[in-house]
Length: 336
Image 1 (cartoon, helix red, strand yellow):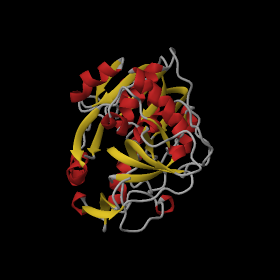
Image 2 (image 1 turned 180 degrees about the vertical axis):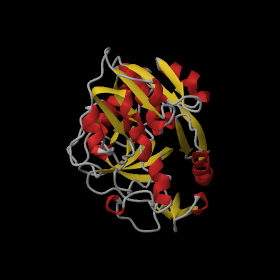
Image 3 (image 1 turned 120 degrees about the horizontal axis):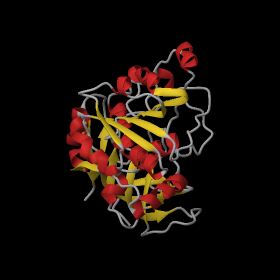
Image 4 (image 1 turned 90 degrees about the vertical axis):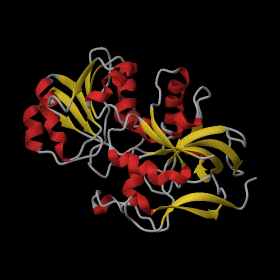
């Protein structure tokens, strides 16, 4: 069993990367349905810096409740240390990875140990490292739930209608904006796995990377405007999303769909005139879906690209790297 205390990165106030502080805190104890995991690696995701800055970019009605101090983080890969009496299928020594308790901000994975709902975990793919496994859960499940299977009935805070993925196949053309980032690079690979024709949009430095992942066409947004070059696409997955996402509507054929990962404002009259659908969802923890993604990771059908790694104590530097943008894949914290 672990010692009574552990190192964890916590927020005592909101602000920039400098507010991330490494503290000594008690090791948590698993409750019903939970396991204690010794963390080996932690995926760094946008919600981590949303939480750090007080979620000022989210509408007030969509902000989850939390109190300071708080341990950020949702993604992990590690080894089960102990299990609650009511947990079946996992035992001490099992290697696992997961997205914990999202969309709440109670994942608390920036730590040496974490208590995790067993239902949020899947067995770590044996052929990949903890670093590569930790980079997969949130980004991979976001791509999965947008493109492959929603997997839940929870309403989105951004729309009343239930999100429905578009069936992908050999006759489908998908444009992915922000294709080199965390969600984007998984989306490229999942769309290719389903047989779609993929147009990747990113800055020119990422072209060879995205073609290696299977992109059929590449558009450098610093040189060209993809919304002026492409017509007749079945689907646009805009991993950037937000207010400017509507510029992609002309890219679509009638009957096509735009999926903005970060939802923005759209003119219903315009979408009706174009005959297109705009829909989105909010990723949720799902151990069963993660196990399916894990099988693709284990066979090499899909891979996690790692932009950079930082020690847990250097979480500030990891957030500073994220703030510089142009990330290729995922940023990961390692826990010695």
